Length: 225
Length: 225
DNA sequence: CAACAAAGTAACTGTTTAGTTACTGGCTTG
DNA sequence: CAAGCCAGTAACTAAACAGTTACTTTGTTG
Image (cartoon, rainbow over all chains, first blue to last red; front, side, top):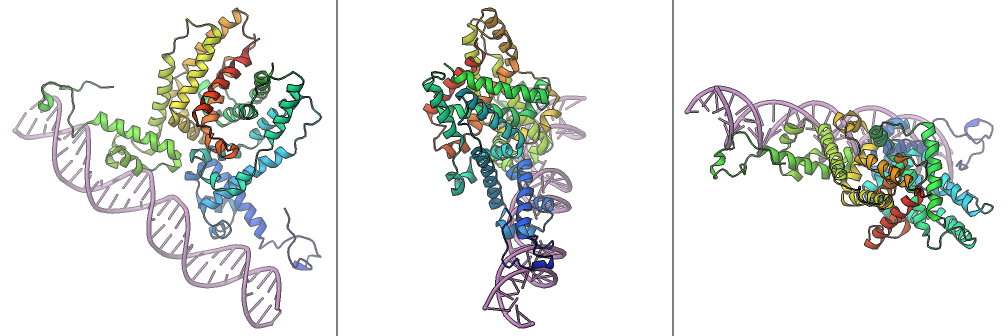
């Protein structure tokens, strides 16, 4: 993340350390705007988010927000792009080649679940984006090129499992991915209405753990012979 | 829906027909505000919905909206309540007592899927409500009393299936319900981002039919012995 | 070190927004 | 049939909002 600054030598008079001035720091300002905007958009959606609130959260002047991002819509797009890049990056780091097919599928299901659990802002942004029928996602050339890493890994595991006679012949990798994602997404994104209606707090530890086991169980049951 | 009006006899001079004045019609005004508000909130969320837009859609004066519903929040709550009443009413009409357990579960899964498919505004309102952590749902005593009819039917079918040795012993009815709902909800509510990213239009007829079969398959596979 | 560019501030602007006021016209009931 | 309430209208208001202007400060470079 730290980009070496031009003319860093002797800068600031603090013995060549790569520290930037406490007063001016474009990278840090940009990053804190993006972080604040992520929070604000995730909490309030596109229509409910307030530019002034983002500026205040970020501890910067509103003018800077326009300076770095153009306008509210472009800032939202930057937030969305960063969120997608986050999950795609995390997906890359999974290594399944040593695992048995069933264990590999289970790992992917748990990865998806845990990523959703640890990144509620990502779920929320997905919800907002879908409310607007992917208006900004469709605009983003960056994101359209950013394919899910999971689909390839899933296909490879399915092939191996099929060869071993473990999985059914007609499993569609997309259906499998959607199944895992759906079970995690719905439980978490709808936890507030569900908890209210069923009078059972879905966010409690044992319930979360139970649902993780359930996702793995359902996913595997749906593809086994 | 038609409520008999006080002093209906001879009213309006049109031979006792239960038609109300073309000029003044509280019921119809209320209903058209509610319908317009449902559209507007579903399309734009709570933060994005505009009171003026609702009034215009309903073809009424904005003042009437405040007259009948108090303010924007109370109008939103009325919309939410009506939406929940809609699905709960539809759930009531399902009769499964003649069906075999497996067939009954399949019917419930298809019912949920088709209801979601035909009522996109309900899904959207759920999304909005969850964005706000069920803020209005929790306020509504009416809705907290309105339990899902599906859970009872589901439990009965599970008992019958278990007795016949068809289903596993440890199936949690709530988990089963959440599974069916999750598969339908996620596919539809996230169809725009998913279609964009996977380059495959999830709203196309064959894809929708394929997903319905998939939901039934996954649901049953997850509870069979 | 002068000249310039980039980073940052404060105060402002025009528009949109939820909600209100002050009023008119029609229906029902004593 | 008059008194009063209910349905409805148009124009208004105060606040909130996204975005801008005019300016200052800080750092870099020929």
